[in-house]
Length: 326
Image (cartoon, rainbow, N blue to C red; front, side, top):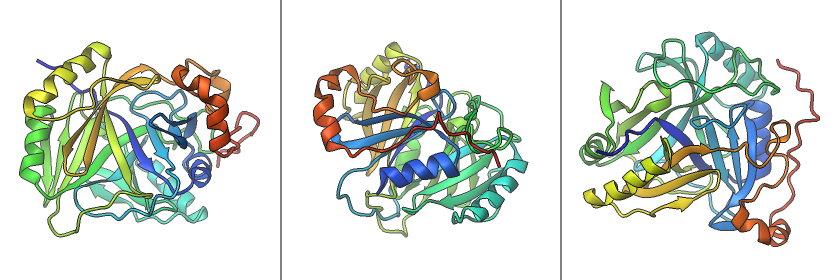
């Protein structure tokens, strides 16, 4: 038997501008940049990690800014929206007003599988959602950024349900249930709610059966992959042995330094990652200045001079900023 997934680990998306991305997540969403590094497979590309106060697993949204990549298009066979958890329904009223004030495109408060939500987009038309934890039971939320611009009682605390559109729903449902051990717990029209592990907002996937839209095309403004939590290297090794039994080709073991990983494409254009809870982001920088310097894993450290000559400098110093929470 394979170790059960613990929930969502992180979501990785593509941005047209690391600078604008940093500004949006820091000053609008109030999420903490816990690591400024590079794509380990493409060292000319920034990889930014935004998370809770301490970079806990299940709280981070990460971005690549591939040079010259075209704008993506949204459609079916796409991980198409990332949700973020906020403490309660009242927080959504705060965020609606904040988005109005900061001119962020957003919808109104809606209900989704019994939870209150607000949908919004960024400058790339990357699709997001805020979801209330008011009635939530399951995976614990993270810790809001203590020194950020958003009042702690309203601040983002982690990742919520991942939204996926799929054309071959019956096949994908079998993958989720029979391979990944998710359970379907609700349905609303052509949308289906699945959860794993302890469940709740931090361990759910919403799958929309969609055969009408054309296939999405990856580019900036779209999601690259979603990662799910496993406890440690031992659990990861179980999945490495387990997935090929169902015919999936995998990356095999990958050491990302901040966590250990495995990748597999589970449906057309749908890339999943399995990632360990540790070691985490606190090992190579002081808590007070997380994400302020370019952090490189040890195997890339000898190439630091070359890498720093290829990636443009981005000022991510926040320890000297006294944010007014409003």
